[in-house]
Length: 260
Length: 260
DNA sequence: ACATGTGATCCCACATCATGGGAAGCGAGT
DNA sequence: ACTCGCTTCCCATGATGTGGGATCACATGT
Image (cartoon, rainbow over all chains, first blue to last red; front, side):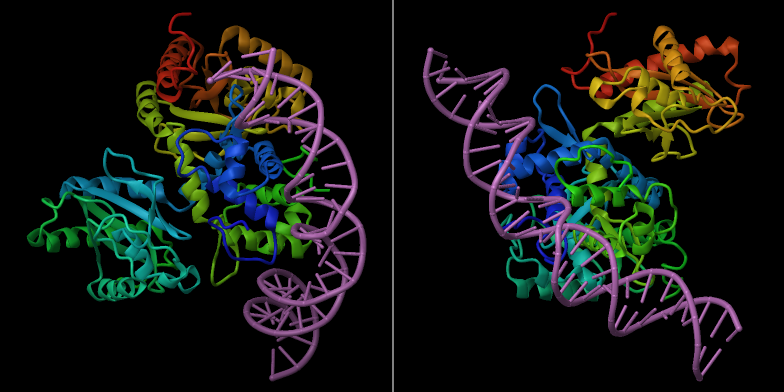
């Protein structure tokens, strides 16, 4: 029944999965969510949603507005998030991304994969799109993460819906697979108005020693900035930044050998 | 039996509480944790710890090193952390803190309360102590958060242990209560070698409209930098920064009126 | 090379614990 | 005043999480 983000893993923990789904509910919505909102969104009984919320509240993963009794993400999430952010060394990436953004005049985004989404975890521009979730099939970041996905993460076949955002969005699984072949061959992904009109994005992978993408690095701007003539130069800049990020973000044991 | 961070709230969800305790396990330890480590730390059976870890893994809240099969915090934590970080507006605080650190020559830390700990969520120095958990009774940040605690958060009586870190650490609950009275009266907290020798810290609150501390702002340095003569000036600088943070971090409805 | 120990992973019967319906209490909007 | 929606608590039911144990894999020491 619970058909939320976490679909698999039947053997184990129902309550835990539902509680984590509750946390994932706070992505889309700006305003705080009430217990009834959660129940509706996850197709749970109000009792259950309320009990889960209270448990998360007691552990600090949610906090409650004293006036409205609505919930939002709590201090424990901020705490653990900061911790994992620094454990991944992502604070080291910000200067590199800012540098790349300045050199290219575009917006630089660094994303990692979280289940069926690409999540922008660091950005090199004034517009903080950080924290944003993007679909994998309609973004350059997502195509890169799919093209060099680790076996356990699930390839394109693990993405049932493939919704269309513009008339250019790739909807057919076969077409996506063909596109990924092209991405792997040319070692970059292009998104030309597939998630929104008037936005063109180039993305390259940050690879580990096993040849899988740990992160995706994107350069995003209007089509007038990312022309055919400038593509090669933009790619070389992005790849140089990606190489620098490999050194910054990956431990020596995880890195690939310098020459290739 | 499960006597971890989350102690209360018996009515509701055992499995969920345990799963969240698993996440909290990743605070203290640098290296990754195995399923058995988790079982020992939380006094669970290996079966249960393993099952909880697998569930968290499936939801992206943990990730597993393919070689060692050990766990670490996963992309979903990074993702939600980034989200809540920006929802709280904490990225706006960094420039202010850097400014304060530069003016005073000290380290500036911004912390919020997470259960029985003060958690540094933003810092204004090169040394990133961000993500660090500090006890409430032996730090200036913690005393501030305790002195202006919201009723639901639990005052000093909710802190059972009070361990001593140096010979100056306040251990007696009565002495802590007296110290908090002083903190409230003088509107700042001082930590003079109570958590570690050779470190002196001043902290002031970032108050909301209801008069409770949403954050604590600390200026931390060696005793030679925080002398009696410089204290007043340092406090005025810190309070000015705290006032600025009130505007940056709190929505107009949460803020207190400008004049007081 | 063999022995030994630690840990990961899976299975299964038991009963504990989560579940959802229901009802009381509250506040706001019509 | 009435009603609607929401939060919160209670409770009987049985689905679901629990932990012991068995198995397999790996690494370490002799």
